[in-house]
Length: 288
Image: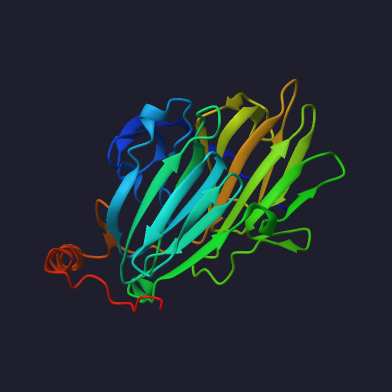
């Protein structure tokens, strides 16, 4: 018999400033470790005011994690120490595995009306993969499949598999799932989840019930953290709801985290920053 996951808690995202002065909302971050294992942080950088994002995220290092950037509208110009450059446009995804170390920058640009919107998720890497070779995956809107169910639910599959359709991101050690789900009004969505995996939903439009008992509706900028189980049930009434559905296998290891670098011990963290200052941080070979 399937066990429906109940809501463990609902959290509101918190306004903060990061990078060179980017105003964003943080759904969760360092204060919540290890509640979201294997995930470390989720930032929501939707804004209609260019002053809140144009200074962007100039060159900075990462080690020991993966950063997943999903742009809804506007664009993000990027470059990294592997030689990758380009633009993440509306609907595109950048899945970057920092591994042993990468230095990159991300500079947001608004659309014609000045809107900029998207999300960045940080996923941890286990000790066995902290110093893996970095890799970069840039996925355009057209490379990300979208399916519709018989009751009108639309699902963009960035990572994972739904009804036989697989997302383009594969071979990730924490077995993550990353879906962009829209449920129309007066409808419902049931999704099987892996027992033992962390399961989260972040609402980005409308409102819906994220529990079978329909105790209360959850709306924009709210994060739902699910309890244990192997199935979730989400439904709507007068409004549709759109949300990011994220899940993954917990790592269960110590976390030593400071700024853009996440390791297992304070000694490893100190080594990373010492190497960055000494100019020996990068271990990979730059793409020719």
